[in-house]
Image 1 (cartoon, rainbow, N blue to C red):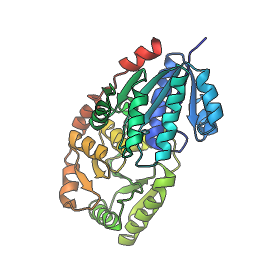
Image 2: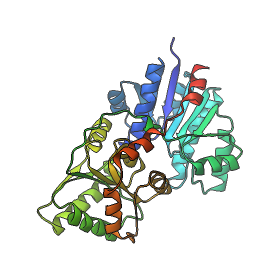
Image 3: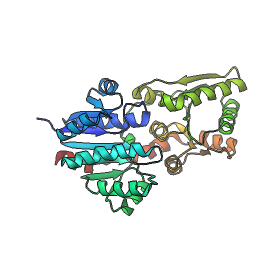
Image 4: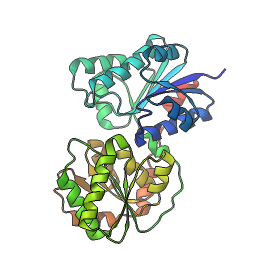
Length: 339
């Protein structure tokens, strides 16, 4: 009888990055012959998208019963254990981990971004719980340092999205813009970016990507209106409501990509798309610095002519080589799954 693995994360909300991580995990576990159950806010859609069993994340009684009858919990990836978004979400994900540990199940913390955790009690409890997990891996040095300070041993790995495989269909003349709402989002950035795109790419096809419609769509539509007001003849399209595979295929066809979200940039790098990063988060800045991508800050203080010229002169092959050099190390996960 196949071992049952439960996957807990920010699934079913339509967030491209988290769903892409789930697709990588599901593919891996299916290849190894495990029975898979995903905790999701939209279990029906998750079941249909990945051909797995799924239950509602917040049916606590059912989740506890499932964990009791399973063999392994995988928590992650993404940024689950932090209290910036909500203390409630931190408590929830810790509860899932604690419940699995209480039933003496193996627990894998899968390539997570840990923190920030500002509440001292929450930070202490996080450390106490994670010390008992079978295997802990993180995706960035900041998370690794935080867990080390809490006395938790962890392995530093690259983001699992670097494991994605897809075909590249480069099309000249298509520009991707990926935006999301955020507390630091502002009209100055949108107008300055729109003016530069109208100036440099007035004859191009502009695709504005909404990865998670509940967060991205309104700002994408607003940006489209700004661009149309600056040049009514420029061709723009807001791209939304797509599956992971459709999003990846569209990014792989781009000539240029200007993106806020970390995983938009990872996919663009893997496809060799010349890109610029809109730096709303330290993880985006670090990726851009490591890959040599030009950066636009949220206060839009940069010389946009310089940023766009740097983007245009990036070497496509070097971008692909950078992405290919980041191989996700499955050995720690494999040891737990096969043990």
